[in-house]
Image 1 (cartoon, rainbow, N blue to C red):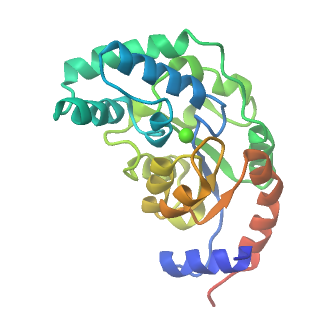
Image 2 (image 1 turned 45 degrees about the vertical axis):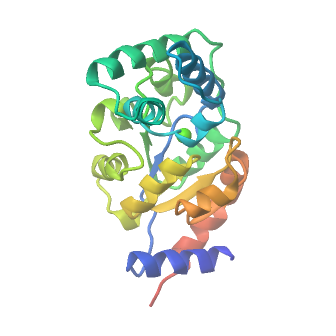
Length: 248
Ligand code: CA
């Protein structure tokens, strides 16, 4: 499908005549930062420490969810029950230590160019992350100075449910003062794409890790790019098409 067809399909499903991208709601891990390998290693090490068999790869599938969600997935598989609040608090603290002990994560190539394009287009930028890792969150406003403002970051601490629930993205829209038909979500993980899709926003999937494009399409992505660099390169053409595509 070309951009025009993709947009018409979105407009039909959303039940609106036009899409105006007034705000971009952007995921952090695996989207702005190349941080997923470190997260996967930290989770895999933690699971091994508490005697639950796992693979590094599975944590890419839980990506975007809160720590509590991931711990309950592991506990249900191994023990047939959710983790208790005490276990969640203690084990997430340990996971945070394991994550922080690894080499600093780098910026995802293409992320800055995409944010610069959004800024030039007059589109607000809101970071929407399931993370509670201060070691990365605190870097956002310096790594992306002039592009991301401190008041425009939604983290795990701001939400009750977290991705794949649409709550974080609905909160991002509220923060930006826009409706679903004015919000474009940028996500790299299936659970995050599902959250974006359920929020009603136009949802862009970007494959930046081992999860294949089909998983993002299945999760509800309106369009999928193969890298953040490609996303940044092709976004201006998508915006041009948004400006002229209407159901009437
Ligand atoms: Ca992510």
